[in-house]
Length: 116
Length: 112
Image 1: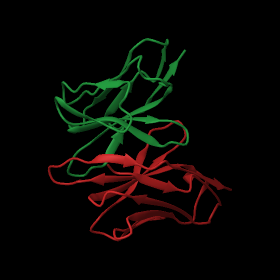
Image 2: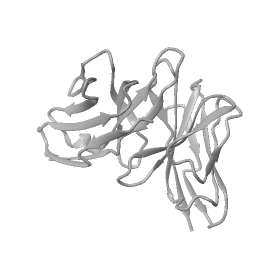
Image 3: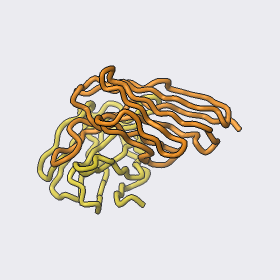
Image 4: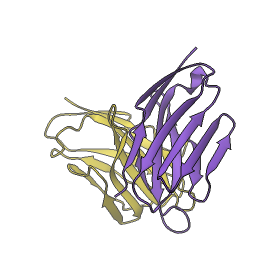
């Protein structure tokens, strides 16, 4: 089955700095890679995702890159703000799209702290 | 607020008792999931169901059971065989065409 490794487990940055979280996956059939943000006491929510036919995707201060050959993908947050502080999870999904269904396998999570 | 509801929010159980966690969604999603969240261990998959009357074990299914009699509902039973059941449990659902998952607000189970 799929195995997703996420690093680092904790990340502390100053406001305005960039933050990068990296994930690797094992199943070459995985073709959908979402990132979720979980604020304290709340449910995880999707913040950005990327599919295997795309190498990079941006949404304002957030970007995700994917290297299918190396089986790794990364989340980049620029100009970090204190409200970015949360736990971030990467995930990999095999056979997403069409009539098939995606089994979500998550990484271990990264606790991001942005200091004012 | 997401269309997927878990209940109760907090649950206390005595050792040796079974307990059932509820998960209901009105998003018309075919797939539903149960995850367990422990500090430092991320979200670990317990069971998932891709269609009514069918479900598969995830990575940590021992001591848990599920049913999927209706598309909208995917209850999780934590049995007395689960050695360390105290945890935060999250239910999620998604649709095959997009695969974005929507989560419930979670149930915190404590064994006393």
